[in-house]
Image 1 (tube, one colour):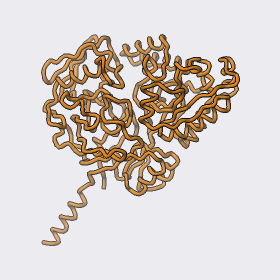
Image 2: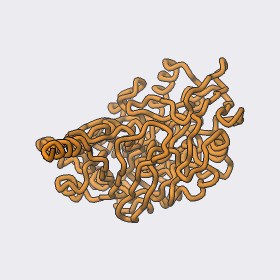
Image 3: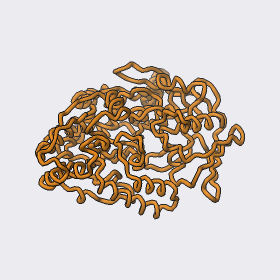
Image 4: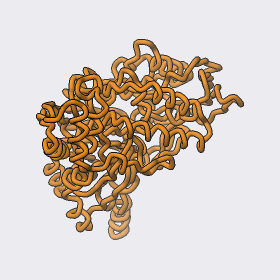
Length: 486
């Protein structure tokens, strides 16, 4: 009898898979409301875990149903009728219904909206409640990206009862609930027992902030974290590839990494200066030195995995002598002095040192100014108080940021802006791709920024862990399919 009991206990222990996970992240988010901030670190924690939208973007970039179970599109492609899941509740117990959808979409597109991607909602003309489980959204014009855009983190559905507090205590409809935030250290999520959909295998997930690359490596090796979905130390990848305790998964991201230039500030308002900077940069040296060979050179603001991608790296190839010639033609035969603000990620700090040396070789003396992430968001992104900076733009399908008059590049090109409007109103894929290619060429010619590389996704996690995304079609660590195996 005791032997049988011992056997049963042993069997139970063997089948009880681990249900908690500690993930490493480089950057701590400034807050946790994806509808009110541009930092990728927000979505990396809350997207599909705490918050959900009408649609969601899947691991391969596909648009999937989420809080909307289905939808119908009118023949003129200007009206969408969304059928909502019923019986859904927010984490505070309030019911989700069509009122919340209307509130969220109207809030995002309002005149006083603080949504970082307010442009996503400009196409919406009207949001109507048909009944508690049905919403009709009418567009100003057809938009081939509308369903996809409703899957962004910026388009998640929030409740009027809790929206104001989402920065510190986020309340969504997702499979995980916010538990606590130890500032400077970690954020803890726990399973939502009342979740309306399929319950994830994990009961608890801790996001631990480790900005130092060496510390990230040490934390993984010691088991202090079990996964680093976006590992910041490419120099250590080979070490983990040789260790059977880990799996190394190298994927792609939507992260166009650039040397941004303030086009409203002399001398960067001169196209020849911007073109000179592009020719002064050796992308391969940046990728090898800052990323240890991981990353793909780009010549415009478009991901190489997209079917409309055009390789324009040859248009602005590394040519220091041409860079000097262009500077002289622009009125700067002896170069000039400037500043280069670098946020914390290693690609920016390491890449900045390499690029500063390359700029010095053609006469541009760029003083490096390290800034923390909150400073970068405040000074550069919001305040536009900078000359040069390095950052990776991880949002999907975001070529249109160069058409925004109030964006931190301060780039103005009416022809490009008109082309983006044409793209957004085009639903035929072949025609859209042709327009995308024209847009890429305009940016390559104008060089409003220097295009460096498409950022890789270096994922390293425990060999027994399954379900983390290989690629980053959107800035997210979706935990809904993550589980431990024996």
